[in-house]
Image (cartoon, rainbow, N blue to C red; front, top):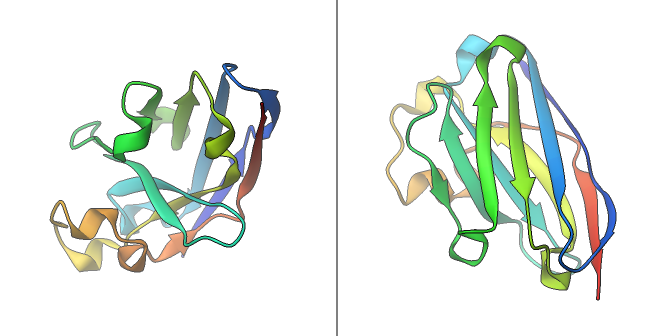
Length: 130
């Protein structure tokens, strides 16, 4: 199993920044990709960003491009999500997730789907006030 623990959420004002962290532990060899998803009240969980442990294959959801940056620190088994210029519509619970390597190399479409992710953190709340 892979354990994922997020941190860094909070209450900020529009235009502010936050950095989320997700530390992976356990059998981390079972995954080679890390992703961030978010879920706002009453909405589906949606893709935010993804990155491979190698640092390659970085993808973002369109609404966060240019504002959010995903990065990875292999030495710390930690993935980060730097969020700048936050907007009220970014308010959500943010989840870190990872697909099992048994799924193989995921296509651009599949890597954005929450159904392809097998390991999930508990989530961290981000609230952006206007």
